[in-house]
Length: 168
Image: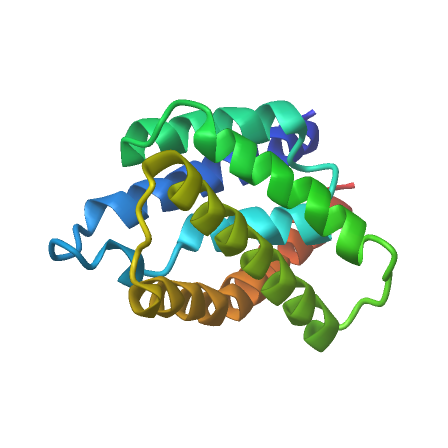
């Protein structure tokens, strides 16, 4: 029973925690895209590696929560998160090779899809063309945090599985 609850709520709570972490550190005015998006790295990890851990309702709730924290239009992050999930599953869902380099490449594709959708949304909704220099800096910082988050969460999941086997 505890394992089922762990599988259901751990990814959501971790993504929400990293949303808070991203919002606690306030960047200087005009430099908001320079910080790495840790919650995006978590989201991409759960979508790519543990597909059944984060369902569409949880993704929608995560997007609503992100909109409340960021002050963006309600359900815009949900839309971007869900589109990222579906496009990412279409693009890399056919490849079932499991090694570190392939999974990091899949994460790179997922982060790229998210940032492209986010930039299109900003252009369409706000009619503003943000400086791509700052946008790319946040993109690359997010990409470089993904391997760290990937290794850390894989370690947690494998540790949790080994604890389950020891208790049985």
